[in-house]
Amino acid sequence: MIKNNNYLEGKMDNLTGILYNVVPFILVFVVFFFFLILPEKKRKKKYQSMIEELKLNDEVVTRGGIIGKISHIDDKGITIETSTAKTRVKLDKSGISHKVKAD
Image 1 (cartoon, rainbow, N blue to C red):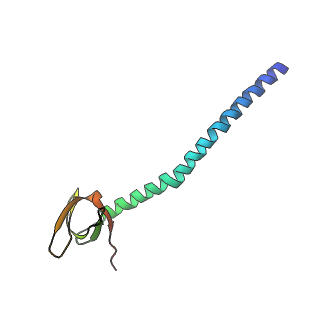
Image 2: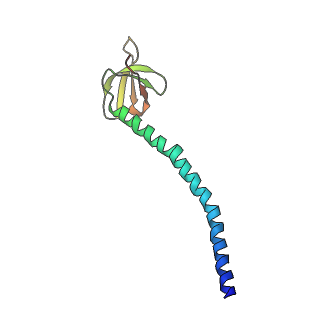
C-alpha cells in the first residue's frame, strides 16, 4: 500500500512539473493575443472600411506622403490629382494611407 501511494505522489509531482512549465507559455500567448492580435484585427477592419467608403473628390494621403483628390476609382486602383496642373497619379487602393478629414 505504501509503495502504491509513493507511485501516485511521483505521478502528481510529474504533472505539477509539467504544469509549471506549460502555464507560462499559455499566459504569454493570451497576453500576445489581447495586446497584439486583437488591436491589429480592429485596425485592419477600420482601414478596410475606410478604403471601401472612398468616393470621387475625397482628399487622400498616399503611403508615400502625396496628397491629392480622387479623380477615378475602379475595382483595384485609384487615380488621384495632386496639383492644380492636374497631375494624375494612378495607384493601388492599398497605397492609400488615410483620408484627409474635411474641416
